[in-house]
Length: 402
Image (cartoon, rainbow, N blue to C red; front, side):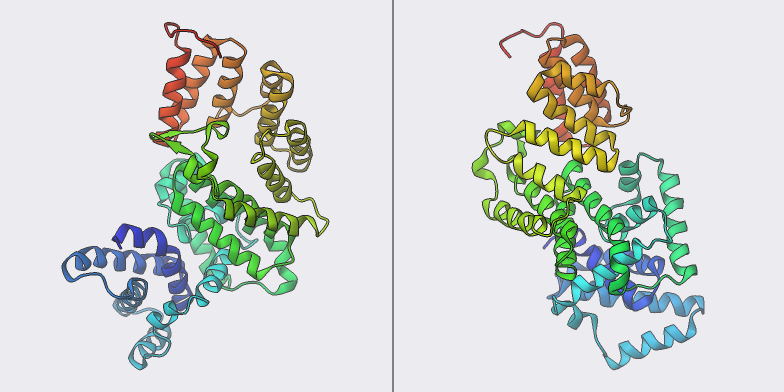
């Protein structure tokens, strides 16, 4: 397995284990980075170890102990870690051989990152960094802030966890519901970074975290609904690209969809609905399910988006409702909704508006809207799709039937 694949797949697991051992996110990050750097040097020469993840954790833990000794701080912790290494108690290789230990450590990490003492954006950014393995550059792009701003935000957040003594633990049962909203938001953000940003590994990472949450909280409808939502979207991943371009849902090859994953998502959605709640993730999962049927029931989709908009007061939800309304009443009706929204920073707003304008016959305005969407696009498949649309709406482009 290539080292970059190990990094994508195992960074979160390695870091969560190290944080549990060391009790310090910054120290764990530095140690993990050193271990991966050593692996990049040694593995091509000596070969990949039998247990790459265990090797990385052992190497990182040893490096952390060396760092603590050199700095002559945390003497008691250094002695404790050194004694663990010398006696071989709970070696990381043994821990990583037991798959059951992995989800709990990662859940501890995500609940730590989503502690209510931290601001919501800080919670999301730190989880993306520690469990998703995103670079600070990538997180800054996701939040539309400069690199320096995000770097300082992450540092402050890690220091706050350390200085405030925020525990690395899943909270007790009576505290779980209050902490759940932030955790679900973080998991879905990770999924969307993978889904919309082309990081398929992150989408899989979010699904894995969603499964772990569902195991921990099997009676929480919004946990089940979020996992259903992610599975229903993720089931279409094999059909989303063709020749390096984004493929709209109506043009996707349904034979490439993962039917087993769709069935699992629908079963989870039914379990969530049976609990009688209609939270935002349940509504979104119901909408995602309706999109998989042909023909689509646009009136029901529009009604669900209306309910979701009332719950969330989200302009992006309103934009998606506009898409359904345009399918029912025509592109001008969709444009009337979009014109009330302040989403100039959002790339999908401009591509949606451009599509409405194109369908309404306003190719000049559509061309400019596609150009704005292209300026904001974050992945090459998006850029290729938008360049095609730009060519189709260019003044000199031949006009065929729509």
